[in-house]
Image (tube, rainbow, N blue to C red; front, side):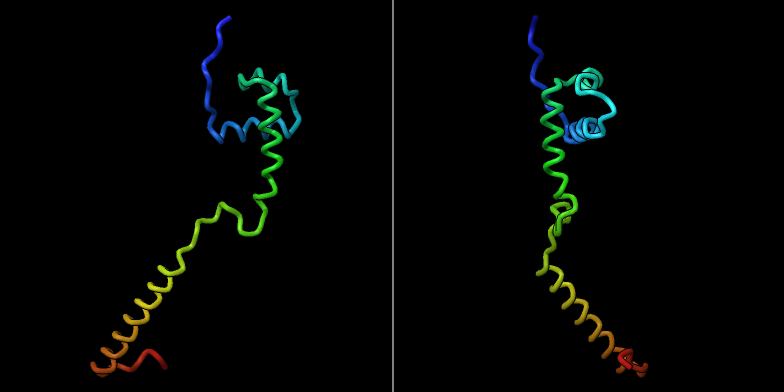
Length: 100
């Protein structure tokens, strides 16, 4: 009997298998046969899935992209300068100021 080459499974596949294991609608042996994965591997993925489930609802979860505060402050300053310039240009042209 020859050994199968090592396979790397995508995270989405692992999550799908682990979720099926958590649901409990089928035994690990049935899931292993359906997904062509060893039952022990499914058990490990299920444990990892359950251990990481709390981070989904955690405060400041890692799914949020990091915010570049300096870039946001720079943009606010740029827009403020533009608004001031345009306001002065309107006043010079005889239009009423927008700052009323």
